[in-house]
Amino acid sequence: MLTKKSVFINFFAFYVAWWAMLISNWKGQPVIGWGVFALVMAIHFFRVSINKKKDAIEVTLIAVVGIILDTVLFKTGILTFNNPLLGTLPPAWLLGIWFLFATTISYTFILIRNKIPAQIIVGGFFAPVSYITGAKFMLLSLYQPFGTYYMIHGACWLVFFPLCFFISKKVKGY
Image (cartoon, rainbow, N blue to C red; front, side, top):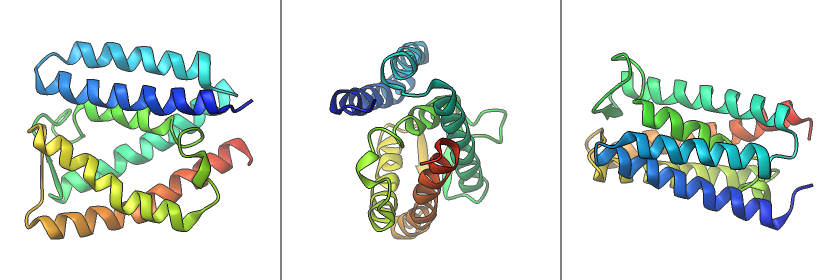
């Protein structure tokens, strides 16, 4: 059963892990971030998750689609990664963040589950901001001029964020 406590745990754990992945990679100590990642994923699946099998499918599908989105943005020059994986994929730390983010769709973002306008606003505005943070840590670069970056990346998330909820509903049936 979904409780306020599980939503709070999911929200808090995601942000702790997000910052851990960012800072540990910035400091050149990615093993710390991956340790926090593993702990948070364990917390999600053993403490928060209502249906582990459906959550695993949901998380995997959303993360894969997100990784494809970042790969396209990388290939088109909207995002430039300092250490792309295999020269063509986003860096490993960002792949991990995608899996962490995917855990939030059915929990942290439960209040906007059926509110597409809110999904569009949240996705279109806040997602590009998180990449700006990564750029401030010099882990990636953003297309210039900045306004063009924000417009293109925001437009992608106007579609992608509601798509996450669509995937979630298809997987979970509600």
